[in-house]
Image 1: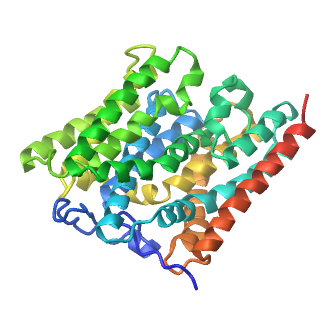
Image 2: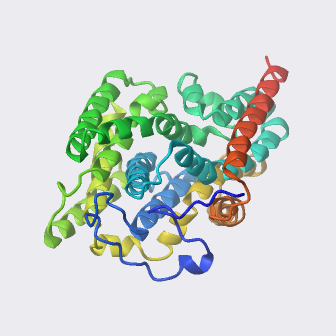
Image 3: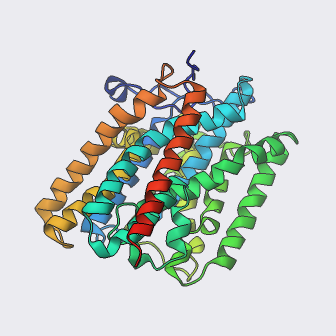
Length: 403
């Protein structure tokens, strides 16, 4: 018998028709102790805008978006906020369990990732330059184990420039965190909502300090979990505020405007305040936090703007767009060289977005629906087997291509 997974508080639309339907008004986020929210289209819109910014920067428009690297910091804050709300919603409904939590993560992330790994294995063994195949095999194994950020962070970044999976470092940061997060949140909630909020804020401040102390001028610090985890904790803390950060409508409008300005300005020009990455991205992280708070309960002008198409559409498929864009770029580099003409950039941009939409529709969604094709046990078997197979393929390739 298949395990039925009711839609989570932030589940995305299930069909293309749902995508273009008018956004439903969110319920009051403080209406119950679980702070259950309806689908928030503004968050999909925010993710969609930044995913397109990252794609444009990687295609060679970095001169327009020199701060695009900070977009991933925005994703970490939003991710922490959403996953905490999902756990709170399940606890309020009496449905939370660790098995349910991890099953949802697997259904959400693994199918598209495994498809990417299969394609990347082919590219890594037969398409990319022979000099990059050793690093590509190592990256394949590390990505399968959600540890690619550690591999890249501890080695010269240039080794992975021509491989198909360097962008998966961000997935490693998230999953290393979310593997251990539920027990921490449950332990904090056992002490009450107030202590949970203040405790999470304390963790955020502590981890920001750790990030500053452990960062170096080396590019490697950019990829390590210690440099990023405070951003996820910030999002988690925002989800726990329980009314402590609620504001009047005029104040929320102002907060939304300030948040948008911080994100736009950071994307156009990432401020290099110090040699510490954590300090440099504080503006975009705080801007994201302000947008999250400004549009709780009801939307401000910033929320309505982000809820429009095509931003919301791009946000729905942003995970798959992000996964597939880099292998597409790698293949194009083999065919046309490193510097793409403008016409090719436009075509590759469209191809990456189309690949992401197809991946979302035909790979992600069949596994995420309540009538998904795998039982709960089958889902865990699928995850463990897939990780083991791709890690083994990567290990074999690493040995075969050894120098």
